[in-house]
Image 1 (cartoon, rainbow, N blue to C red):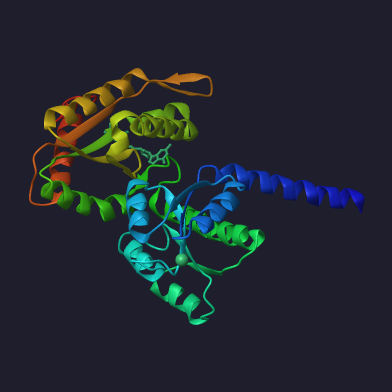
Image 2 (image 1 turned 135 degrees about the vertical axis):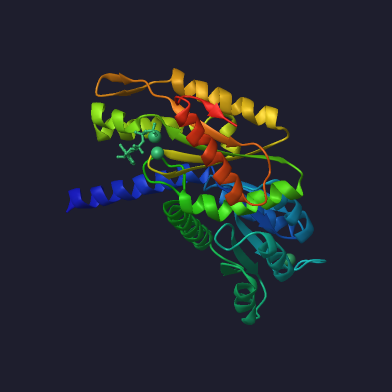
Length: 315
Ligand code: GH3
Ligand code: MG
Ligand code: MG
Ligand code: MG
């Protein structure tokens, strides 16, 4: 019995430490016009190691949210001058969904309607003042857990399991928006199609698992440097697509040149063997009438790169 109990205690402590460790990376915003309430919330959340930001009004809160895109939980009072909690929630919801930022409404009012109205207008949860330290902690934790689950589900839906890059689905869902956005902002947009050279030979020579290692390594190279800000996806097999946005074609093409070279210079290692490989890249440097047209053009250039002997960029 004693052993069982201490094991439970151990598991409990492990979980607690794990959660407190994660909390230090989570930004929480507490909004209340009362300085005492703000200090109280900041203190209570601080003991849970959260990064706590505070705002004394709705307007201040909106400014803080705009400049801190990593805020995940917002606790807001209802009764505040100028902008009340409802108005604040509805303003936040114009830009951030319930699946991105969890809002917990707070109020000392006896009006039992308040919680329902908070939820109706877009809050995820509600706490009546006064609340205990335990209740606050568990409500916040519960909401964080929900956001984390949604993040996991979103990643499963949008990412390729092997490489962790975005998948075909995500690429086409978001590519069209980027096409329009870069046009409106008069930005240069470059579309690239890339394909590993003689990949079948790599599989045949080193085995399928080593082929997978090459794919993961190439994805790792793609996730570094300038490509971090580009939309990069594995469309399937050993084929990748990139939407690169920037100020000029010269700047973007330099990044592709550097990437192309880094692939050739960075062999993979698998089963004690060194696997050197190269890629071919087709670029579409000019804006066409649609993303599809640009992809087709990039694909044609990729074909020309293969025809021309592989390991090259055609634009
Ligand atoms: P090319 O230079 O013309 O592109 O020749 P290639 O051999 O790279 O092209 P091909 O399309 O003939 O072969 C692609 C191979 O990629 C065939 C397929 O078995 C392999 N492949 C597709 N998906 C995966 C994967 O997830 N893992 C591994 N290891 N291989 C894969
Ligand atoms: Mg108040
Ligand atoms: Mg290939
Ligand atoms: Mg291919």
